[in-house]
Amino acid sequence: MRRLSYFLLSCIFALSLSITAAGGGSVPANAQGRIVYLGGNAAGFLLSMGGVQVIAVGEVRTESGVCSPARDAGLKGGDLITKAAGIKIEDAGTLNQTLDAAAGRAIEVTVRRDGEEIGVTVCPVREKLTGKYKIGVLIRDTLSGIGTVTYLDREKGRFGALGHGVCDENNNLLGVASGKVYECRIVSVTKGVRGKAGELKGIFVGEKGVGTSDKINACGLYGELREDIDYSAYRAIEIASLSEAHMGEAYIWSTVDGIAPAQYSVSVVKVDENNKENKNFVLKITDSELICRTGGIVQGMSGSPIVQDGKLIGAVTHVFLNDPTRGYGIGIENMLDN
View 1 (cartoon, rainbow, N blue to C red):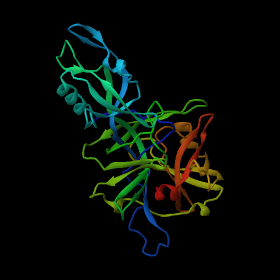
View 2: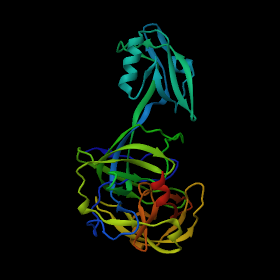
View 3: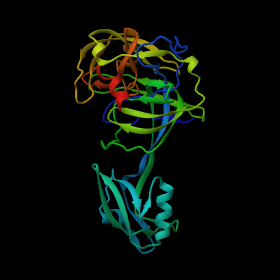
View 4: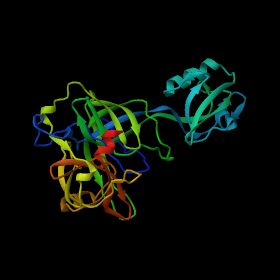
């Protein structure tokens, strides 16, 4: 089993796919609204970055001395390399093969920086120790994390999670090409305190996977579920529009220990149907057990479904750093529309 760290995001999130919540069963035949299945379980996932990200720029030791082709070309930490010598770069192996094939000849490299694509010319050099051609960059091609799926859509065989976009530690919005989602066990919690967000920590359980992600936007992370998901074990729930949501008692479903989600009480203290940043709810955690365990909302809980009057109204997305018992939520309609 592999230990996971949470994603470094501009906001707090979680992704969950596999559901063992009580109250599952078949879809009600007389349901008037759209029916989905309730999320809340922890899951671990590996996401492609749609290229190779430069973590740091360094030097290469050659037979003739030390140099830094990447620095000379103007590459910077945070750059996402998407092409080299006309070849699409999706992983570190492809980049290394392309540099070796260049054999010291200058090549054109396309990078995404601050949302824009720019081209630079880089001249690989042969490293003295390995004999391989290098440009002097520390790179990565995937991100790993834990999270919580908001809903599973049986009709389309898809899931929705997070309720917001995914950013790296440089606050760059990721354009994820693909990713694998695994079952995950939460093994510990760092409690949130005023001024510092807490976090959930977990490990992968099994290698088969429960689905694949293929889309990220400002409203969440989406993907396809494994075809043999057993929906009879999950709780079917009706979708509610934002116009049905109101201030007052509600519940969230989240996993903060082990693999099974639990229901925790919250209060909806504000409803804003027209918020342009998808902050449609302000929530306050009222469940004493959850506050004791986590301090409130922590990294790994975004995407936790919000249920009011027996219907799914949205998902947890952000925490207030000055008060971890409070946070924002997105309306489920906004997630489904996107």
